[in-house]
Image (cartoon, rainbow, N blue to C red):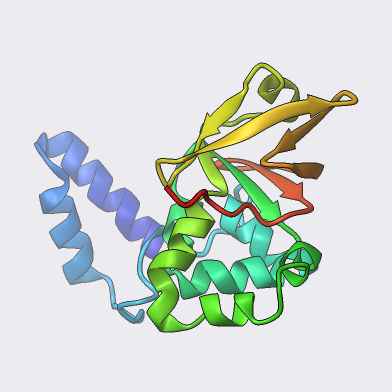
Length: 188
C-alpha cells in the first residue's frame, strides 16, 4: 500500500510539474498511517522483499555481525547504512569485537557514549563501491568520520587499517567487506 501511494504521488508530481519534494512529502505524510516511532523512521525501516539487500540488511542477516548491528542501532546509524550509496563498509565480526579489551564494547553501547560509538562506526565506512582489487591502488581511504585509514597489500591481500578482508558481499547500495579487526580511529 505504501509503495502504491508513493508511486501515485510521484506520478502526480511528475505530471503536474512539482518543483520540489515538499508537496509530495506532505501528501505522503498526510495520507499514510504513521506506525513508526521517532527512532524507527527513515529508509532503514522500509520493508522491501524484491531488491538486493542493502548493507544494513546484510549485517542484520549475518549471525557473525550481531555486535556490529547492536552498535549501529545504539549509535542510531541504521539509515546511513541503508541509504542509496554507493558505500563501502568494513564489517568487523563478533570475534573482532570480542578481541577488544574487556568492557570496551559494553561501555561504548551506553547512551552517553553514542557520539564516540558513532565516530567508530563511521570509521568503518567510505563512499563508493570499492572491491578489494581496486583498493590495491590506494595508500589510504577517507572514511565517513573525516579521518583516513591506511591501506596496504601484504602477500597479495588487502589490509585496511591492519584488518584482513575475510570476504566480501555485494549489496544493493555498495559492498560489505567482512574484516577480522575493529578499526579504531586515531586520536587527533
